[in-house]
Length: 514
Image (tube, rainbow, N blue to C red; front, side, top):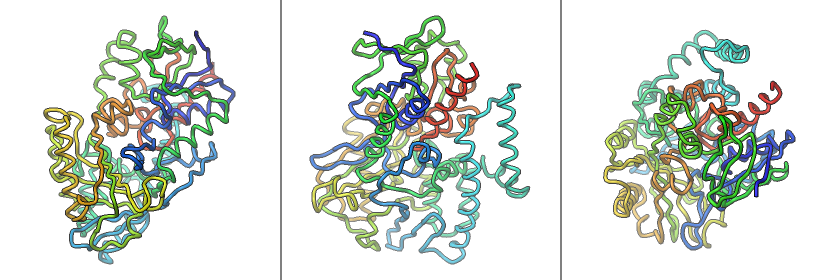
């Protein structure tokens, strides 16, 4: 049996749901086909131990684009909003960072941080404008592309001559040089570096880590929310908006192949043998999975297939979940502090040293860690009086030397717990269950090639005009009717919805021009 639709969206991750909802609102008959048994992609809530649930991959909401929020009428309930970042110190003299201020440092550092945040926020706002637009192609004479380039230039000129020069100077620089020039306090420097490299295969000394810091802040200026019910509740809200617009969402539908006939797509076939027909197929899967696995290299021009293969998408962040019989004890913290975001980043040198082993296929013996305790405010996630800890841990390379086995996973889990125990000595005695998701596990569970949180590295050669790669920066693939709408496309990863919104607008725009 074959069903025909105006558009088929492959994958019910947040970008796929945003794209489907906006197409349906424009009158399209849309179906979303999801391989897993729930919507959300990597933004899901699930149980990892009896009675303990957690946001399985993404666990903070901070990049949702205001345009997406407004157009879909999203107002997610939050268990905790506008979180502080507490950069932990072993002596209990922690540094507390908020969007526009910092505590626990000298008055000079506090003033420097205020100036730094003011400038970075202004630059992030400039970047945000272009994250929410179809990127122009370079080297064409298209009026639309030329206009987009002119608009980018005008937006930069509006910064003023001095600030425009500073933006162009900084955008390719590393965050290490910026923090060492501005700040004195080690925890302040380490926390800023962590925000620049989290989820990437980059260290503070890597070029363009100021760009990744700006990217992180280009949604809600870095303000972080914890959705009530975990990230899965946010994804369910998106699915509700999509269904209300008329979208059909089918789970448990793993796509076996995207059907191609004479250079154009005609639909998809599932692993169960069902076929769905449409001349418009939009993939929320990553570029490699889409083009090499679902389409197949035989349908691609040789040079394009080579660019797909060379797209860098090997993850370097793991996720650790702990079921705890109570909150651990951290010197210098009171109970209410556990509703905030806690980070272990030492200083800028600590973060760089943590990155170094990953260059050679080894995990960090002293990792950087981002921790949240979502059950502190949201009692639905753990039994009464108990808690869950959700931690993003770097660095844990996808291509670990010797591979990720049960033994290597346990060894790294022990390393991470040992690192946390330097600040919370009783944490090990509190653990009743644990789960570690390596990049290999993230690849398997969430169908992301390489287990990379952004579906592909965020570097200047894989960003804006050339994301994911030359010849594919405007969502349309070189097969008639095939599009990308996921994090591997412009602008990149994070739970922002920008890629899904941009793709839907570009598809509708193309139809008007046809």
